[in-house]
Length: 306
Image (cartoon, rainbow, N blue to C red):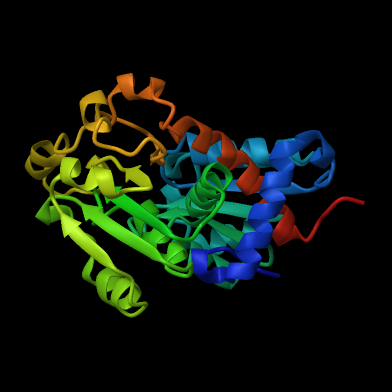
């Protein structure tokens, strides 16, 4: 039995195989419509979510399985004080696989230690978001045709952004990757990511504050929102929340084949006028997330076409 807690839980070869499966699913979803018949997915969401929770549910339903779970801690026994360990012990008797989102870093890992079914980390605080990373990799590979020889700009909340942390961890394993970190000083990438991931892997990167100056260099621009729920001080959030707004004027600095990605939800950081730009790939990205999660569920349950 395997879990997915970190994007590094799969080797590069295993990740590439999963992405190939996801692309095949995307090309013919009906072919996979019965592979999880009789299987149940439990969605254990202690924190609000739209895309991640619903895309997991859509993925399992598309595979012919069924779904049970809760969408907030208040609607679960966590409100009565039940531990994550006890919850997953109980859920292990109800479902075949579980996806957990939790505001505390490490909670899905704790769950995996006490589970008898595969556990998927669907986001734990400001730490990791491996299924969003699979979605990001699938989007880049599907639209760019490669996951190497890329310059990726990461813009916005790089301190608390778990999607950014997971994506960096995954991409440093591919050849000739370079990062441009675009953020105010207060929201720079955490020291442990800089030292233990980027420096230790000898990955070239630069840290800048100007989005306009960075744009001409980029193959991918990965925008993120400033996350109000991660701030202890509302004044700091208000001061930083609109620091970067991507609009058509800024898009003029970008290459014709640059892609704009965003894990969503979007607040103000991408103008709605950018949606019409053919380089805006974030809604395609959200759709591909269903196929990535379908491939992941099949992989962890070890099911396939008969």
